[in-house]
Length: 460
Image 1: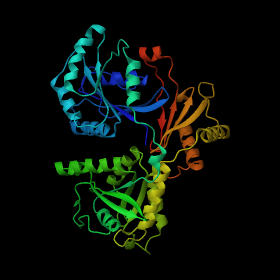
Image 2: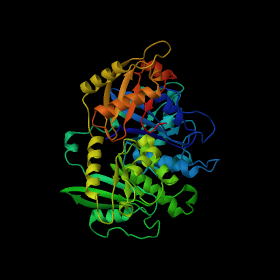
Image 3: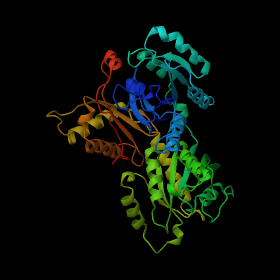
């Protein structure tokens, strides 16, 4: 399982971004009285009591964006809630319950995840009784906070840590059921491929582009092991999405990518790579999903074009996904399909692998000795130790004296070492450079300008 995510939600102007900066200990999110400043999700790695979690800030629920981006903002919020392990429902004690607060509470009513109701702007203990009215919303344990006065930061952090999921036990790693999402633009043969896997006409197969409008799960077995194939709607350019059905098909396809263990990204052998393909690969990379680039309908070009030409074409088009393996299949006849599924299993195993702290630290020290980091302000930055904090994707944290001192190229060098020397050769990874927080008093009193410093192959 990946690093647990703690997602901050609420209506506009309740102080979500201030809470985010406060908990993160850095000035990362823009704080402004104007509603709608936060649009995209913003995340930061937080450590408390030797537990790591990703803190995620979201836009205000219920706002009508001035640039007509309301749908996109709502999509980001929905994605964050779907992936959350703990939710912080932020409200404003001074304003009291508003209709938008009640709307947020209704939206969270059927979310089966731990929720904390954070009554922000409770600047004085005299306001504690005023915050009690938020119990009426019925969503989560109430905790009263004040960013400006530094009230109850430690209490909030401890309540978050208490609600984080436990680490993955050995019993969870024995024989998992792998979920494979089959994605790609329209008419690349995804549903035909799923039918081949299921050995039955479970999917509607048609030459009419866009036949599949919803994501459908199909269970099948291979060598005595159970799998789930997720057939997804074919995607098309955003400006071509003219109906609500097509819009929500795209949302469901993206959600299928998020809940998959491995993604098979389909291309048609006779067609050039399109803008939609690039957008979809970018989305897969953003989600840190193991991926196989699948060239389907290869029988149409067999003997006419060497596979190396398509390999170079894919590598040149997607340079940040050079780790992803490439497969050539014919979904209709089943050629190379079993080999493709076996390779997907290998990626699944890589994504769930753990490396011992001792081995990892020896590797990091050897990498630094072989190529020391560049000088920063006339000093050589230091790495004190390294640890792998989660799987799916493998996430490595380097505790150092100054994250900003490590250049992006040096971080990519370290990722390359991990890829070459560890069992993560064909999957995306996360690398955080983290500085231990100073005293709690400094953390509560404000922020530093330290760089959060996360890097992956997906960054330019």
